[in-house]
Each structure stands twice: as structure tokens, then as C-alpha cells.
Figure 1 (cartoon, rainbow over the protein chains, first blue to last red):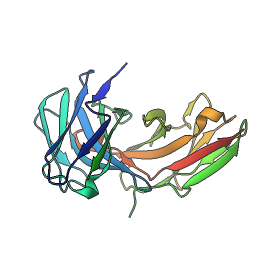
Figure 2: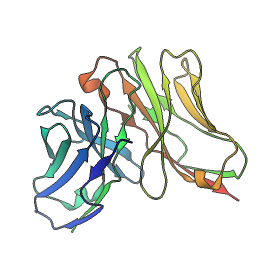
Figure 3: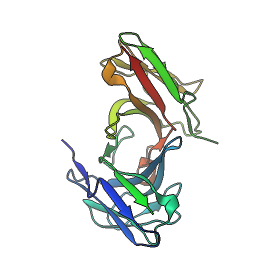
Length: 114
Length: 118
């Protein structure tokens, strides 16, 4: 089975801190994604990457950056955390190829910024 | 404009009955894929079913079927014989294009919370 692992299930940080959310997948997937999930808003794409060192902005990239130095690892960085970044963060990965490639998700990181 | 619209914030169904969760989509790309995911209270996202824009038949996976009406741009999920364990948030999602790279992202709807009553 594909495994997408997010480093923390719960995280509490203070306003202004630099925050790293780590995601690792073990199935050699080319594509990796970071979404945030908020009640009533569904999942919104922050950033994604379709190859090592490649990244593209999603729908809500402001206040975030990403890093993908190795194929299996995709990091989400909050340079200066703010309270409006309190959210559930979901990492996902998928193979390239045909259109039907589904996303495999990690279990999520609930981030609280105080 | 929203690419994926789920108009039902919440739905209730009696155990053993069928339920339909609505999803409409907006795209001008002739090649696209539609997905449904389930998210129980534990938070994991579980893939349920996929429908491609060129697929001739509606997709089915066990108790799940997708009522794909291309002209109406709708992709409703039908769950037959509901079970208590079906209580969860359900998300419809779309991938546009088929040429790789940035076309691999999924756009999600806001979700429908399904509650199955005993």
C-alpha cells in the first residue's frame, strides 16, 4: 500500500514563528501536493510539485513556500506563521500518466497558531 | 466561478436506504476526470470512485456508483444500502486536462456531510 506520512498530527505554534510541515511518500510518486482544509471551504490547493525541485503555485499560495529536494519528500514552509493559517494541512501524492491517477493522502496535520 | 459545486452541506439518510450526493462541475477542457473521496471523522481521505470524461459507462465500485451526466456537467455519487459507517464528509473533485505536469492537480468541492441514521 502507498504510504504518505506527515511528520506531526497536531502542532501548536506562536505567531511569527517559522513552521515546517514535512511529508514523505514511499511509492516513488512524481507528484506531491499540499492542501489546507477549513470547515465550509473544502480542500484548497496551496502548492504542488510534479518533479524534484519543481513547484507550482496552487490557489492560495500567499504566506507559504515549499521545498522538494528529494522525490519522496515535500515540505511546506510558513515563513512567519499567522493566526489565519490555523488549519488542517493535508499532503498528497500521485503518479503521473493518465488522467485517472488518484491522489493518496496523508493523515493530516492540525496546525494551531496562537 | 467555482469549478466544483456541492450544493448540499448536509444530508441525512436512514440505514439501508440509498442516497444521492450532488456534484456539478465547470470546465471547458474536453478531457477531465472526476473523483469522489470520503473523509470519516478520523480525518483520512479515502478514494471511492473515478469517472473519466470519455468513459462511456457510469463508474461503479461496490455500493458506490457515479451518475455521470455530461451534458448537464453533473457527477452525482449514489450510495446504495447505506450503512452507519458511511457517515462521513464526502468530497467531489476534478482534474482537468491529460497532458501531465500541472494538470495533475485536483480541485475539490466544499463537501457534503452525510449522516446515516439507524
